[in-house]
Image 1 (tube, one colour):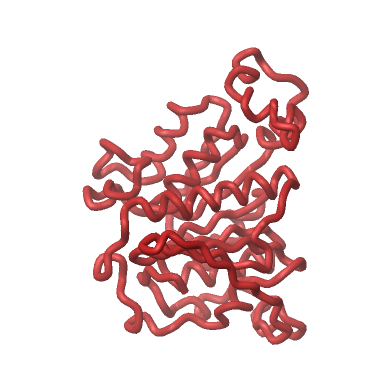
Image 2 (tube, rainbow, N blue to C red):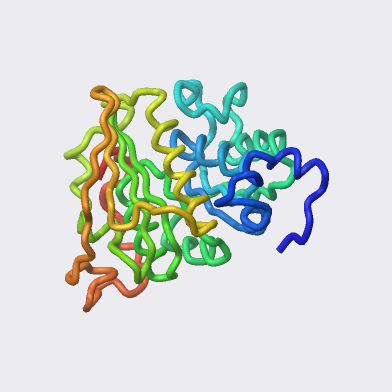
Length: 272
């Protein structure tokens, strides 16, 4: 825990420090926290930007992709960095924004072979992935490792967010037990996505992370927040813990991470 602020930090975080719900103690807590962001694309961009600005002490970023020109319509963290690895591009952005933040990059695809080792040292995980296989893998690993998880996903003009706290509420499989076949849902490349949409959803995810770390307010635990950009509406769905859930239920069938459980739905960008 950081015991005192420098003059520069007092000035940088002044708008947090004057908030009664945050204060100096809360800002110190943020500076001592570690958050893992899976994906540095549409959702990862605003999540990483706002967590870095807030002074999260360490941000891990996992992504094996490179920046493509088509990404820049929505992945605003990568401006001017076409053909650079996304993790290097994101790290460059954070280092230019806030020197207090330690950026740990994983230029690799999250997989059953590495996920438990990667997530083990972080306080909370943010899922900004774009396919079902990864989404279920991240959920299951976080439940098994007892790591809180911010779920977010987007599709065309719609997005959703839910916060998962293992042993204290439902997980993603309580809501959607199994992924649909990959050919049933169009990819982002096929269906398109409104460029500003991930900014909204990612900002909500970052808000949830900060609230969880500070222990303030009501997080989206047991609540799925659904956003429709075309109608400019938010709806909330109550989600109950499923006693028959295969990973967090009373008699779970998924008790470790096995590759064969995550071979479906790869490459699908959808709400779930």
